[in-house]
Length: 282
Image (cartoon, rainbow, N blue to C red; front, top):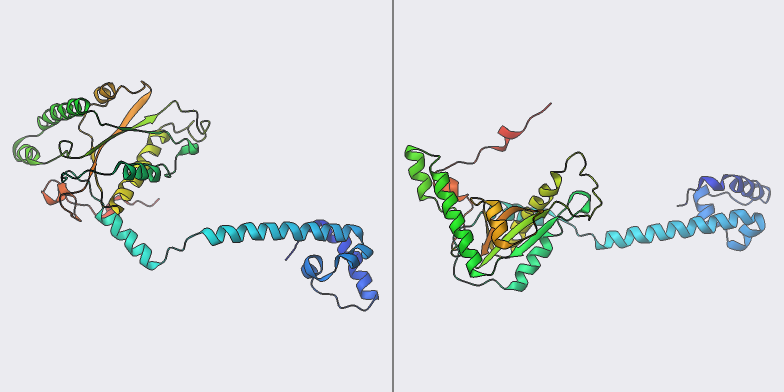
């Protein structure tokens, strides 16, 4: 149906002529879009014919574009949503890996999916570094061990004993090491959305990490986030630009075991808290 306000004068003329000729007057949208032939419309009013043609063409183009988009849009039914819920529930921070290599093409595919995550102003500030060099890996592992020993000193008594038993890194076993940085000086996106909240740049990288985690789990790949490291030391070891900030050091590989509960919960460090405790109303 065509509803074009600019055709009102022409429509009034056409309506009067049709009335004089005793021709039934259909609803206005049908007249302008479909009912009046091009030749008859031209005889009644060239402006009417031209306007009706333009309106019909515009409507057809808009309808086709909407149809094309609708045809491409997937339908997420109840079965899909149930599987998505399973994926979210079974995503875990993995620290125990088997000695099986991960195809580099699969790693690239996962990074491609991660890069589909939203970012402030479409800035795409994530920078991925595949850490393959064994010497660099070893130096980063040593930094983790030093930082972990320092963290242990913050606890006393039973909590210290429990902390000492926790496995907080899978770096020695994981076949894939991935350092993820935020480029705070990127010109991509022209700074849209960053003026009042510049922290949305690193937030965007974190969003990509969440996407990567789910995509990895869907492919049977486990991922662990190692945060007990010194960002400046790791950045120096990897020799990245000085204006990149380390967001995450990740371990990826095939997991040794699957658990629906987080490891820190399973080993008695911290239980899950009901989400209602975190929801406020104002």
